[in-house]
Image 1 (cartoon, rainbow, N blue to C red):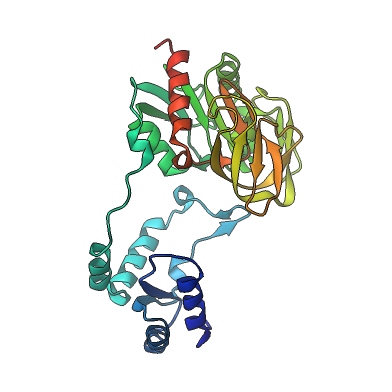
Image 2 (cartoon, helix red, strand yellow):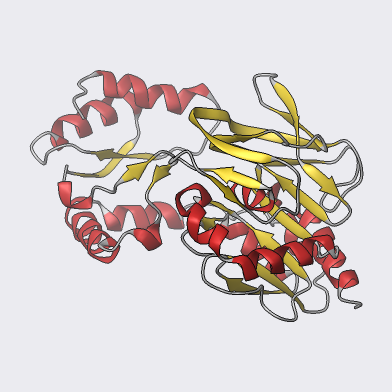
Amino acid sequence: KGMGLSIAAVVSGYQNFQENNIRGVIFNQISPGMYPYYKKIVEENTGLRAYGFLPPDPSVTLKSRHLGLVTAHETQELKSVLTCLGNLGARYLDLDGLLELAQSAGELPACPERELPSGPPVRVAVARDRAFSFYYADNLELLERLGAELCFFSPMKDEEIPQGCQGLILGGGYPELYGAALSDNHPMRSSVKRAVEAGMPTIAECGGFLYLQESLTGPDGRAYPMVGALPGRARMTKKLVRFGYLTLEAKEDSLLLAAGERIPAHEFHYSDSDCCGDGYLAQKPSGKCWECGVVNENLYAGYPHIHFGGNPQAAHRFLNRCRRFGGM
């Protein structure tokens, strides 16, 4: 939007900066009248093919807040937004050209996690409600392929974690916006604390990490009691704290990683805690690094969101620990 000839320079930069598979361009937020102009300057100056555009449309705007977009399950009009986007795509994108391009692509390499053997079925409780909704779908799908039965529950509304589970995952989200509801649910807090203290293998990322601590001070300035399975008090700040893509390296053997093993991760949060842990070394591409993660043989709790795709063995190790906890 608002660019002229410089759009060819931008596209050329992406095309030539590093080796890649870029074959075409789609333009966003331009008018139908400007599309022939953009199409011409890009195709003549880069050799790439233009596959259409999307015009500005206020009806497909999504709301945002301090950690990004309002999540999908909170967007009441999401279905109408997707329908509108579909109609725009059908009208303004070269769908036939895109399908032809897609069919010309080579085969993707095999995913390393597919080589891992699945084990006996194991039940894993996964927190999912308005307070806990940040998950990599890849992670959950991999756990299922390796034998996990995912049992979703709400720390806000349910009274205990699902019965018969041998593992627990508390994902990221917005616990700071629902501090009162989480704190007032005493039965659930007690259920989670008993499970963690009994040694149930547990992954608690970002918001889930805050939930396990003694208290969380929300945007209203009030300190809400949390589970108390971990020492530490968390609080909201007015700016992003330790954010970006990073690599975690284990300093010692623990639930997910053996000493020296690594896994890709991501941090993005406006909160901080006086007990962030020191089990992992977090390293950014810039060279900046810091310690993080409360870890032991049954626990990973910390701010970083990990991605099993970068080290599928971590998912395998987690589920095997769950099986041992369940006496399998």
